Structures are given as structure tokens and as C-alpha cells.
Length: 522
Image (cartoon, rainbow, N blue to C red):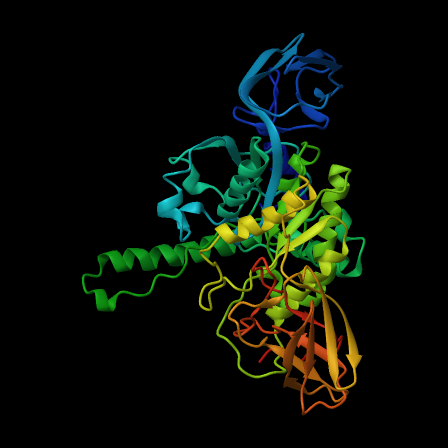
């Protein structure tokens, strides 16, 4: 019997809602959790409908009554940082008592994005030297289960894990180095919530409601809705079973064939079908399953490393990415600090000016997101790998993100947050003056002339520019462009020769002063 997809989604969701037989807390309030210091801390859970619930922690006691569905929520007053494990106790007048040991109070950050944020410490270039030293009881990480949902969930899978040499290898490497830097500089416990999932686009981490507020997001949601209407579970299952049978036949034949040369290549094993709304690549799916359950959990802010999966739609990303930031702030009901990583240099270096690059366009879309308040960007165009989309140097990434947090959230005025970021330009005769933010002590990292500057006139033909540092600005010119109108810097997926840095040694971001339509990448 065939089941229409519209009937399947509610059925799937119903299976995920367990019956509450006693007082219950979601997994984020489990053993080894870190609670946010110096602000109100909501605590919620489930019990018997109408029962009185009492929550005690750190000398506080809060009471509430569960609603008719058993949901309850209290709010602890602002807590002081504490590296000593304390007990969270919840008592229901009808459903018993729950005691959760070893909760710390400190700084909590969400680390999200795709594979480069998910990337494990064990797979980095410093794994052998840093994992044996990873003995930090006050640094903890929640590895959120990779789950999608068709509608927002309140329960989350996963658990808090204490940093030890035995556990740290599976941590998000960027999240770990970010936490390590904060812990060393601020001196309080740090909790990292990892909600990253490799190979997934930005819109999957954003609520469909917010996506619908802009044409670019609305088009993605409407595409999903159309696919959902067309989805036929019975037909999909039948096709899956047929493919699986063929796959099994090839595997059996290969096992029976003694001559390796006569064995057929075994294709990838077919995957069981599921509704489009549950695909982790579709709008809102990861948000529903992995982000929404955390909404309201007290935390300082978020760090983000993603964009590779959106690189083919860079212009769209100029809208989609800011929507994600605004969406999370809406869910948490505050202007969360949001610090993100600009994509690293990737693919083989290019050697001529005027080349279009979807990778550079995506990097530029990320730079433009800095227009939103309380955001920051870690530029890493100096540590990528031409043949590897996953640079193994994650220490510099985490620490460059930490610079923004230390300066903006923890009052470290001596910390330089970024390399030079383009501010504006001015045509001065045959030269173009480029001004920057964070350009104190601007120089080149190799002592040579500034490289990878391109300059063009009204004909929109690009030429390599001669760049000269003038104070905290750069003057760009070319004998072939007597009347310049536009400049670009590091405009390539792998801009070999881009060498502009500031006194802190932090690299300048790519930029473009023009708004011309770019041709297809060559």
C-alpha cells in the first residue's frame, strides 16, 4: 500500500515523541553541562501535567507548574562563573526527583557550519602534539547528534563531554582551539555546542519561516514544497528495493568470482528513501532537528564555518547567510555575537587578471555580512590547500575567531581582531586610493611589493595593478589604465601572491570596489 508523503511526515514526528513517565530534562542539561554566567539561565523540561516543579542550583530554588502537556520552564538568576561541579536538582510533586551532577558555569558558544567546523581534532596537523595535552576539565563540548526534522523539535540528542586526551580527538577542532584560547585568556569554564554537519548548505540551518521573508529564501522553500508534493513514498521504496536488489546481486557475484579481474565495480549502496523535507540539504531541515532544540539555551554567541556548499550560488548567499544570522538572533531573542570564517584559498593558483571566480564571490558575500552589527570574520586566505577543501590547520582558525570574542565580548582592547578589511576607495588621477579598517602597520608578509591587485577602467578590462603602501592605505595604478574606476584584491579561489597583512601579521580579506556582473568562472 502506498502512503502519500503528506501522511508520512507527521508519522515520523510522532515516533520521536517519547512518553514522559517521570521528571525529565533535555540532554543539554545533562551531566558535565556548562551554563552561561552573568545572565538569566532558562531551564526547561517535562513532567506530569499540572504538577508543581522545583528546580535548585547554586543556592537558588525556582518553582513553576507544568502545563496541561507536562511542559515546564523556570529561569535561574544570573550565575557566577564556577569551575567546581555543582548539582542541578529537579523535583516534581508527582513524577519524582532528578539529580544531575557536575555542571559548571562559564562561557557557552555554539560552533556550527559544515565539515570544516565539524572536522575532528584527531585529523588536524597538530593532532599528535595537542591531543596528549588536552587535559582541561573546565572545557567541555556537546556533540549534537546529526538529526533532521520536518518541523521544529524541542528534544536534542548528544551529550556533554569533558576535555581529556581520550575524548578530545572527536571534538570540533576549530571549536576546541577557540575554547582553549578563551579559557586561557578569560580564566573561566568554556562550553562549546557543536551543531555542524559536513557538506550542508546555509539554508538547511535556517528556519523556513525566516527564509520565506526574502525572495531568495522563499524560492528555496517553495522548491522544497513542490518536491514534497511530488514525492511518492510507495514508488520511492519500490525503486530503492529494485536498486538494492541489483546492488546485492553484484556483491554476491563478486564474492563468488575467484578471478579479481572479472569482478564488477560495486556501486555505492542505495540509500533508503525519505521525504524531501527530511534531507539535511534542504531548507530548515537541520535547523528543525539540531538548532531549534537549543533555542533559548543561555549562551554568549556563535561561531560559524560554512559556505563551501553554497559556493555555486554566491550571489544568493549575500541574502541567505545574513538571514541565518538574523534568524538565530530572533530565536534567542537577543543580538547574539556571530563570528564566522571566510573560506580559505582553494584549488590551483591562477595567474592572470580578470578571471571570474565563484569561490571569490562567496568569500566576498561573507565579507558583506559584516554589515550586520556584532559580527566578525576570520580571514584564512593564507592557510588553505590547493588540493584539499579541508585545511588541516585549524588552530589558527579557532584563534582568529577568538580574537573577535576576546576584543568585543571580554574587553581585551589590546587584541587586534582582523587583518585589513576594505573600507572605501577614492580615484586620485591615474591612481586609486584604497582605505582599510584594521590596517595599523600595514605591510606585506614577504617584504615585497603588494601583490594580486587588479585595476580596470570603464571598459571593464582588468590589468595587474602596481600597489604602493601609503600610511594605512594602498595606492593602486597601472600604465595600461590611465583613467581607473575599479580595483580588486585577491580575487581568485587561490590568489597566489596576495601578501597584504597588518602589524599583527593577519591577512587582508579579498574585496572588489566594482559591482559589475561577472562571467562564468574560467
